[in-house]
Length: 100
Image (cartoon, rainbow, N blue to C red; front, side, top):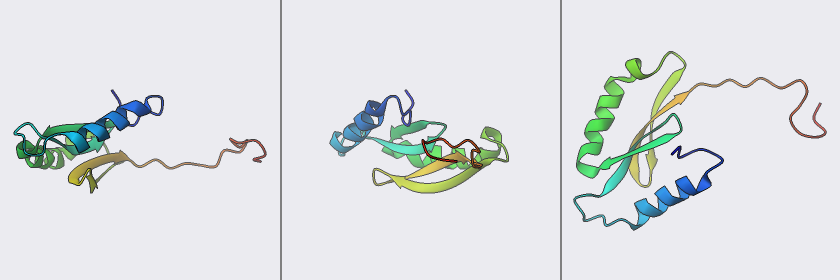
């Protein structure tokens, strides 16, 4: 499901609980390596950096000129973030009661 979907806050809550409570000594420990397009991708620790490198090399194939790429941290692990540059313009009617 979409990690950042506002209608399903339990998805992100469940992922965070899973990341905190999984056995870090396990060969199957999953860590986040990518955030973008409403998704968070997880991989076994030993493969995450390779996936990150592949995403960074393929960024021109994945997005267009509106997409921005940056590095950040999620659950104490580095992640690649693909985000679209969204420019908001002021709504003339206003969105909230009392706005002009």
